[in-house]
Every structure is written in structure tokens, then in C-alpha cells.
Image (cartoon, rainbow over all chains, first blue to last red; front, side):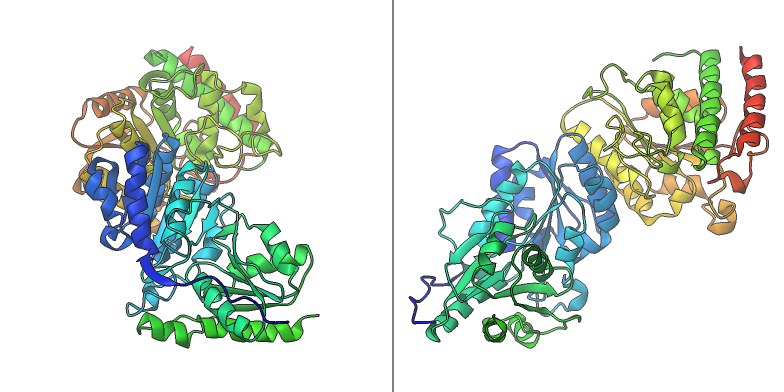
Length: 323
Length: 278
């Protein structure tokens, strides 16, 4: 491990991914008349209200009735529309799960679901509003593609990819403002194709959602210690980019980082793919079998171990286990 | 499809024959709720709905969703009778590789409008289709058949509220009110009454009829078509197991197949009815 060039990333604060979603939906609505948007009385929060304002005839608020909303989305898709249905991730996935299974996954219809307020970074509203199991639930729906973009640029691009994709989609977006990772004009995003943000040779840090930026910050700290860390933005959890995981394995050690329970999320997906190729030691950053509480997002991320500091600590642990 | 009344009754009788035979051959299934709904489904497919078996994907077709998916034998029999599927397939019900799955599954039978079986889902899906029809300025109608026990699902009432509020008059729900669910009589499990008043209070036009009386069934669907400004629900009072004496009003035949002797007896009874209808 010699000295390495510092990562080229300079993280500037950008928009929340939910804001990027709202803007992208409206943009999509201008070019695609088949796009229909549904919400369950959270349009001001999920930002589908941007679309609603511009296309009132193609927007339906379903009331606080997520199960019904998911079923309606299934029917709209059966009849040739491209529905985007949104609510908080936790309500969309937990209250709409049977409907996603029966009205969407089983017949494999072309419906899109975008859950906002993913993870614990929503802050003060507390755990009943926090989605910490949505990746696992969505990955448990056969035929679904599951995404968790890290910034406004990738969110916009992936909303467009979602509309172009024939089949069901779940995407998580978040409440807080997040750093911009990609160049504003970057549209090189494909469902199921990870982005390598930094090449590295000692360890691979694989993140999704808000944890991708933490991986970048961690890589900077590690670089100062002479550790060369690869950073991968795994914006798609399913289908997983197994080639990217194989490349990560070639560093000999992996850290995954996600704002999700460790059960059934990014870490599980990556571990399964790694084990199927050339297994290496893996350490997991995520939420350890618990629900969070009310506090500021920063306080919660610190308390529940979702920071660059934790990623660095996990990298040091995994490097000790490296063969 | 434009059957007259005697012909529709003969079709319903033939469908009942096939329901008994196919569930008997499968060795499992739900005869009671298939037999109760036979007149309703026959009326839809052979008189009421605009559809064409030669063009199953016709965008302007009326849609029928069997939300009470466990009664799929009655739907499969209608498909066979109408010419959508080979009648020989009926005897493959529930067998490996058959398009006639134990509950409706579009992966295996694409002419199905929806995959159903988890109760409570069908009305929401139907509303999505009705909304799409409205957006596209098409005049197709959407029919969704619910079970009575199914009306215990909360999602049904979420959907009922939405359709009433949005005045979806291209939508018609049918409750096959045969009064029996899996464990017992509906009134002993979780009574639905006053059922018509519930739907009315959700903004629906409500028609309560004898759902095993073909003429009354036809009249109700005609009234539903003429209704503007609100969705219609037909609360069809039916007899579970209708047409087979020992299955009628018998909780045991909600979800149990007749054995070979029972199949024979049932078919004899249905043959007698057929002779009267001939």
C-alpha cells in the first residue's frame, strides 16, 4: 500500500433525490403522454406535486390508501399506461406489498414505484415513518428492478431509464439534500450497471443511496493513510451488477454501506454475488437489527453508524481479514 | 356475443357440467363459488360484454376481472364456451404445465385481464383500467366480480371510496353474495350487512337481485350500462353450489372437490336440468 493520488471528488451539496424525482417526472411527462402519476396524500413530500401541477389530468391522488393505489397502478399498466406511484417508502412497500406482488409482480406489468423518505435520514418524524426494509421487500418481488440512487443527477437519469424499461420498478429516494456526485450532464446510467467512481486496489467500498457519498469521503481518509480504495455506486440492487462485484472482489476485500437493515439489503446482495464468484472478506455498514428514533438526520446517522467514519472503520477491519 | 334467454340458460348449464367435471378431475378446487356465479359470468360473456374471442387483445374490449380468483373454474368454462381456449384444456385444471392454474395467472393464460387470488385486489386493478379508458376517451366497460367474504378486505373499501368519488360509471362491480365463506356462513364470520347501504354510502348505484335468475341478471347489467355519473354494484344474491343439490348451501363445498361418485350424481342432476332446458 503506497501513497496514492487523492480521489478527484469534491462533494458539493445538491438537491434531495426526492426533488430530483419530482422534477424528472414533470420532464418525463412533457415527452411521454403515457406517464400517469399516483400519490397517496404525500405529493407535497414525495414531490409528485410538480407533475400534478403541470399535468392535473394525468395525476391521481388516491387518498391515504396505498394498497388501493398500487392496485390502480397495476390496472393502469395493464391498460397501456406507465404509472409512477409514490408515497413514503415505508407505506408504499409495507402497505402495498401484497398488491405489488399480485397486481404487479406476478403478471409482470409495467408499473413504477418510487418511495420517498427512505432510510433514517428523514430525522425527527421517527421510526414509524422510516423505511429500513424497503430494499429487502422490493428485492423479494420477482421480476422487479430495485434502485437507490445517490444524487440528483443519477436520480433524474434513472427515472428516465425506469420509464424506458418494460417491467416493474422500485426506486428509493430520500428527504435530505445530498451531495452531487455526478456531472450535471452525465446521463450514462443503466439499470443494473454500477458506476465505479474511484478505481482502487486495496479494498472496494460499495454504497448505494446516501451512503455512496460516505464511501467517497471514506476513500479520501483511507487515501491519506496510503490505502487505495475503489468506490462503487451500486445504484441498482437488483438485478445486481455481478461483474462490478467481481471487480470489487479483485481488490481482495469489500465494504458495503447502506441506509437499511443489514438483513436483505445491499450487503446481502453483494455477499451472495461475491460468494458465487471469488469470495473475499466483507464488512457491512448498515442498521443493526433495530429501529431508529427522533433526532436530527445528522445525529441519527452518527448514532446508527451510517457515516464515512464507520465505512473507514469497516475498511480497516476488513483489511485485517484480507488474505 | 348475443345469446337469447333460453340459450343463455343452456350455456350456464353446460358451464356447470364442466365446473363439476374439471374440479372432480383436478381433485381439488372451489366448486361452491363457481356454481353460484355461473349465471352472472354466462350473462357477461354471452350477452352483456363487448368482446371478440378472435381478438383477445382488442383495445376496445370490455374487461372482466374475477377478483374472487378461487372461482376460476367458472371463468375458464366461459373462455372455453366462447372459444378463447380449447375445451379439452378444462380437464387439465391445476395440473403441471396447464394454463388453467389453481388461481388465475396471466403468465400462463394471457387472455386473463389480471392475476388474482389474493382477495381484495381486483377492484383496484379494474379501477386502473377504468381510469385508463377515461384518459384515452375509450368507451369500454370494466366488470369486477367480488366474493362476499372478500368484502371483508379493507382494500375493497379503499377502492369503493375511490370509484365513488371519481364517479367511474364505466365500472361495474358484482358481489357474488352466496352467503358462505371458507370457514362458515358469512354472517357467522363477519357479517357484511347492511351491504347495499354500505356501497350506496360510498357513492355507488346499488342493484340487489337474484343472481341465479338469468333474466334478472341481464336486466341488472342493462341498468348498470345506462347509469351515468356513478359506478354500479350488483349485489347478486346467489346460492353457493347452485345446481347441485348436495352442494347447495353446503359450507363443505366451498373449497373441496367432489369425489367420483359425487361427480356422477352431480352430472345426473345437471343432465336432468339440461333436458328441461332443451
